[in-house]
Image (cartoon, rainbow, N blue to C red; front, side, top):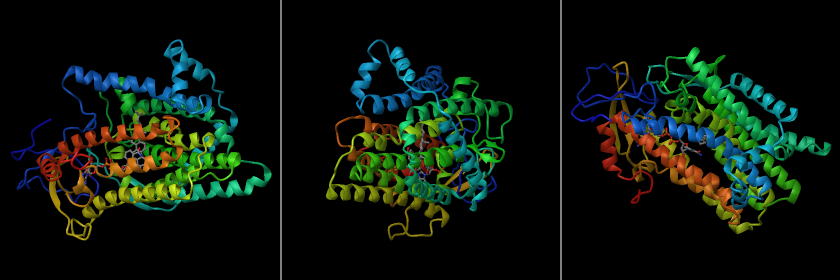
Length: 481
Ligand SMILES: NC(=O)C1=CN([C@@H]2O[C@H](COP(=O)(O)OP(=O)(O)OC[C@H]3O[C@@H](n4cnc5c(N)ncnc54)[C@H](OP(=O)(O)O)[C@@H]3O)[C@@H](O)[C@H]2O)C=CC1
Ligand SMILES: CC(C)CCC[C@@H](C)[C@H]1CC[C@H]2C3=CC=C4C[C@@H](O)CC[C@]4(C)[C@H]3CC[C@]12C
């Protein structure tokens, strides 16, 4: 990576930053981003070994591993009573390959109910993307200078969908119709989601190659990496934004619905169970918070850096509905009576974590929206006025906040994110490791994300970022890391 001192120029883009200036303003040194075709954090190494590892070995491993991992989660919950030890003994009985074949062979082929429900849901979600009212919001300017437009109607969609779900549950109950059939058919759901999303990623690859929606697309020259990472930054199909659909209208809503389905199934089997209540409540509040803040999500690296490929799209279409819902799924067959005091403590810490995480995201947005003219924790914020350069040479201003949560550490908000996940997992107690899979993988995702983001910000802001790092020396855990 280039040294950005001595008035060197680096280019990039961002959402809430102020206007593009003429290139003449070089009173402060400015930084230029050289990652226009592929993203920071997935930048192209000049070292052949590192490049092979990052662009071929890791993608191939994840492509082979992750779709099987989704099936392994299902198998562990349903056939091994939530025990990874039992699952591992089957998997390694002969060879891992035959173990996996055995797991896949236990699944039923998707029934018309599952395929029909998923198709209907997709049609409903797509229609609502267009039909529900919402403010027009703009994503950050992309490296190619495009400004994506979105309709901010996610919260309404979330409330409407979850509301309709519970209305149907109550209305159809007297007729013996229950959504718990989706719990009983989880194997079919896993197979359908896995197959459909792998094919969909192939479609996205071809679309990116043959008919990209915007100039923010391109190939790395490596077909495996292109499939894994994606070709287009924000592909649109018939005007529908693919990433908004996969991430916000499919993955996260199916997550919320599956949690509700697990709660219904648990109620049918055991009556009211407080462990299920605590876990489900925290997840639904967290997802409501997400949709309240959805416009902010459009400025995160998922949307402005990551391309539409296996990582994000398969991840949101197949991994999120299964891994992210694994705690409540496990709790269906492992009910725990926590008692009022323990339940209340978990809910309190969980809600506090949601609030802290939300406040951190909001502080960052507020300081930029007001151009630093606001109070953070009752004080004038400590800010760094940074500059960076776009690909077209224009220079932009941005603000880095160095107080509030952003003064504690550079990614402090990941701590409440993990703490919250722990709070909705602890109700499962400690009989098995399986329910902790999400917290463990989340910790890995966030640690990796923090280093990708550091790389991106350092490349974008250069010495301004170093100035921030000097002020706030810790990456995630204050005084430790
Ligand atoms: N449950 C899950 O699986 C996951 C949840 N999350 C959650 O999603 C949310 C968004 O994720 P997050 O990683 O934060 O999103 P981003 O990756 O977009 O956040 C980092 C961005 O914020 C800007 N930024 C960084 N430091 C500062 C600062 N000091 N002042 C102002 N702006 C700054 C930079 O963008 P710019 O270019 O604008 O300067 C940087 O790239 C979080 O709440 C996170 O916890 C995240 C990952 C996984
Ligand atoms: C295929 C893989 C090896 C990994 C796939 C990872 C993705 C599924 C996830 C990576 C980042 C995740 C998210 C980021 C931020 C979010 C905001 C939060 O409030 C809700 C969850 C999420 C949208 C989350 C969803 C999964 C990822 C995209």
